[in-house]
Image 1 (tube, rainbow over the protein chains, first blue to last red):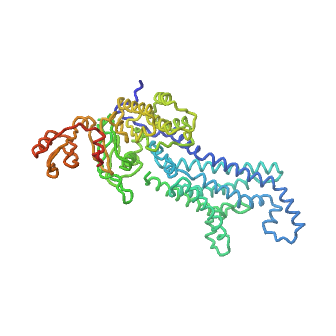
Image 2: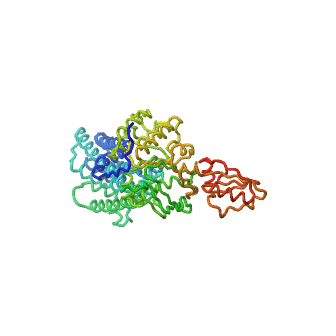
Image 3: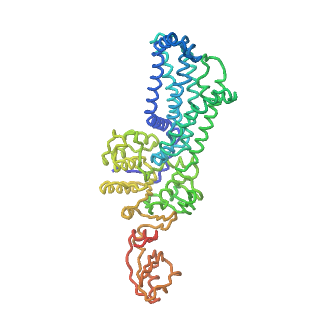
Length: 283
Length: 297
């Protein structure tokens, strides 16, 4: 029969011995937890980018017919530029609107999880019995989610360039890279907020509801206000949605850089607070 | 030199808001022993275990597990490398298969015992490719036990380890526990099954409403604890306040029932001198437990 333990064995385990294998295990676990959300996000991003690049020609043709058939229509200002400027068309529909919202929603969804959710799910006892510090749990979750957000951004860039090529539309790669970089940077701030919500809101589904409600509040209440004439200039700087959209002709330093910095600093603060709360909390 | 006490607490107290879950708990667990931790639901067993493993912070007091301070997160982390824990709630990660869960847990333990892993996989007939969410409650418990036993830990902390298991598997688990202790591990387990504690434990600790009400060896309970039944014309006149060894007294009509921990002869002499007729009976662990937590047998 195999002996099961060694009496009084004072086993000293160096952190380096545990380190690499443990980190691999932690990130693997975080990946398994988020993979469904990530794949859904990937499908949404690729689908959205492919749709607007491949439908562009048909949309423009329809708009031109509308201009002839309905000269009485009061078309918005962006409409006329989008008719002739393909990068602006992409900016208008994707970077400042739908792709941005999809990135934000999935950044929040990918960040939801962690020890509070495990407590609601009943697995936290097993998790915390392992020789892993709470910082490592939070860091591995955050790290995997951040990588997934970056991959969503890379997928968006690749889809935009490939589908623009298929549609024979000239699209500068730098335009895509810089705009998607802004989206990913802003999404990190929302990811940080999501990690924070996960640390302060208890329950399995409550953090998701709170996170998505916060996005709704942000886009349907705060953004219309900051876009209004009465909003002070400083509010526009911290309006992360505006920052994420950047200017249509991105490529030079503007308020986006400052806004992104503010967003990331606030995000860093939220992650630090999430860690502080996780360490202090009884599970 | 190796510390003979694997677990040691002093004045451990835990408040949840207005509720005191654990009150001034001080006890020790000897290296190589099997200690049963008994108490009713909500008595404070799981809270105590969670404090010992660093999942909760005590409001007051402290302790050491394997010589490490339970309040210090870094020390607690080092301690958990040498401890295996099976929680009361045997929920496992739903999104992992049994095989993935084993590989995941193994990554944290350089002392992982692949031989025990294989042996228990065969013994419990666990399907490695099946997601844990599709396991029965019994299989989940067996998986949790495999993950604990294969860690090659010095201390096994088992919270209701046999809950939900059929008698055959329960027997296997108890044998494994005894084997682990025989091989040098210390076992600290909570249970509602007094018969299990009686079968394998060499020490019993009973907690009631957060307070330790009994800390004795099982042998002492069997050999020294006695129930003394005295019949007296005026039982209210029977005074045992100054008599040593009296644990609990119940009066029912003319019968005075006493649980004695020691000094049985002295108690008998005292009762006879007060005019009682006396009968001495052996006492079971179950009776001691029920008496300890204030429930009549």
